[in-house]
Structures are given as structure tokens and as C-alpha cells.
Image (tube, rainbow, N blue to C red; front, side, top):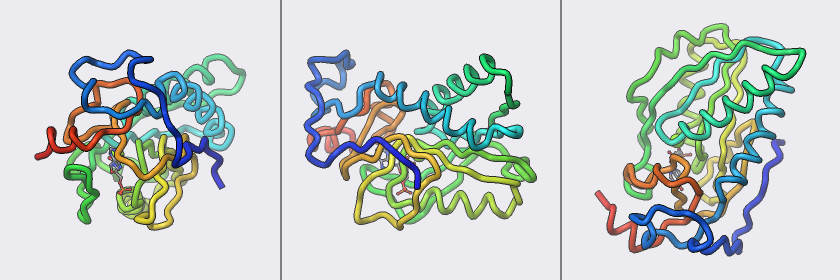
Length: 215
Ligand code: IMP
Ligand code: MG
């Protein structure tokens, strides 16, 4: 079982005033729940764990856009640092895929792959899927079944966040950064209808903002 840093349900988080938050979002957020620095520290350790397990061969890191792009970029930087500072190293190449499953703050039943590289390029490769958050698990399970049709040699999944929710299908990624309460989270590339990707910390969205940015 993957280990993770648990953010408790009664976690109070941190006052927004203690951190730098863009002015345009000040009234939309309740609390900072995971500060940017803590995300980076946990990501550094995930990089080490991944290299320990997958470091024998060429790794293709598959970024699930758009929400995964910050985590992906930072994780790749930490893997690169390990590669360039140790005697053993592995080639790392990158691929991108775009999936969409969300409208407002609800996961929809249809998970759509709406662009990115051809999955068939991944045949015979050691693939690391990099995702922002697993909630029901449907997105990842759909992606994994599409990918298995292309016969990759190995597939591992790393997700920065996993939500503790009764809506979970029970799916758990191989590597997990944080397990988080059942709230809608934004920042560090996680969005609400495309907003809040331009926020460094992971924060809880307030109800007023859910109305304000509703589509
Ligand atoms: P799942 O298919 O229900 O596991 O949902 C996974 C996808 O929904 C993630 O890749 C996110 O893009 C999105 N998502 C789920 N929860 C949140 C959240 O709290 N904030 C932002 N996006 C979320
Ligand atoms: Mg995502």
C-alpha cells in the first residue's frame, strides 16, 4: 500500500492572510490547506520512491492535462535532479494526454480523452501516469483500460492527491502525495471551471465562489 501524508477531516488549514494569494481570488477561498512548500517537499520524496522502483529502465512520464501540469513539471524536475546527481540514471521522456470528466464541482459519468499524444506510442514502454487528484477513480480506471489495449510493459500511477470520499470506486494509485478531505480543492493547477490554476497553494473553495464561477 502506498504511503501518503494524511490531511485530516478536521484540519483547520491556514489563514489566507498568512500567505501570498492573488488579490482576484481573496474572497473565493476558505483556507490554505496545503501550502506550496509542502507540496514541493512531498513531491521530492515521491520522485525518490518512483526512481527506486522504476529506475532500472527508460521511463515515459505521461502527464494528464490540464490539472496535472504543475505536479508533472515539478516531479520531473526532482527526477532530473536525482538523475544528474547519482551514479545510476535513466532516460526520461514525456508524453501528454488530455481528459475531461468534470463540470462545476461534480465528476460526470463520461470520461473523455480529448487530445494529446497517441497512446499507441506507449506500447512496450514503462509508463508513469502523473495525475493531480483521484476522486471516484473513474478517470484513472478509464485511462488505465485504454492504455492496457496498447500493451505497455509496465504502468504505474502517481497522484498528488487522493480524496477520502464515499464516492470512491476503491481505486488507489501506486504513489500518493496526500490524502485529502472530501472538499472541492483548487490551486497548483487544480481548477474550478478553468479558474484557480494560477494559485500556488492548494486551497478549499468557498460556496460563494462555486456560484460566482459556475457555468
Ligand atoms: P475522478 O474521475 O472522479 O477520480 O476525478 C478525477 C478528476 O476530477 C481529476 O483528474 C480532476 O481533474 C477532477 N477533480 C476531482 N476532484 C477535484 C477537486 O477537488 N478539485 C479540482 N478538480 C477535481
Ligand atoms: Mg485531472
